[in-house]
Image (cartoon, rainbow, N blue to C red; front, side, top):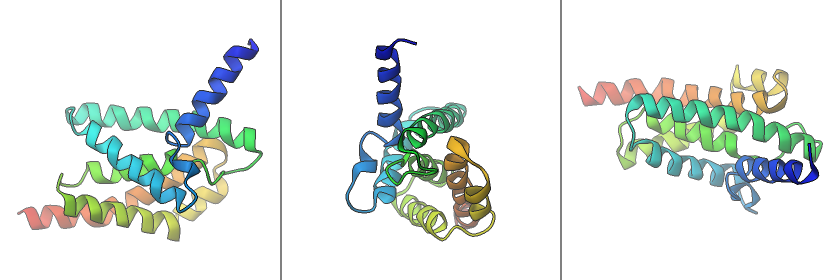
Length: 159
């Protein structure tokens, strides 16, 4: 692979893994990255549900690749600047909730809570699944916790 192609791939991976610079925030980069996830969810809401799922799967796959590239370059398991996992987790959480500001705020807070507290199996995934897959899947697990609590409540209140 030529040096130019390698540098372009590295630059693209860094841009994506840092959620277009959110990971460079001097304060709470994970929360800033999760806010980027809300923007992604707003964009994904413009397509049918199958497109939303496809967008999230694509985001997950890109996140696995990009975060692995950056982690290797930084010689760290999960660099603090890599926040595509928070962007993905926040987007995945709010997309299953009603598209109303209150539900999205609750989804955002619940996702960040479980991402920070890391109850089992979120902590297990973080400790045992390595590379880009581990970086992304612990936030996917945190999103599942948030959805498991908020989605049934949103359905109950909608009835």
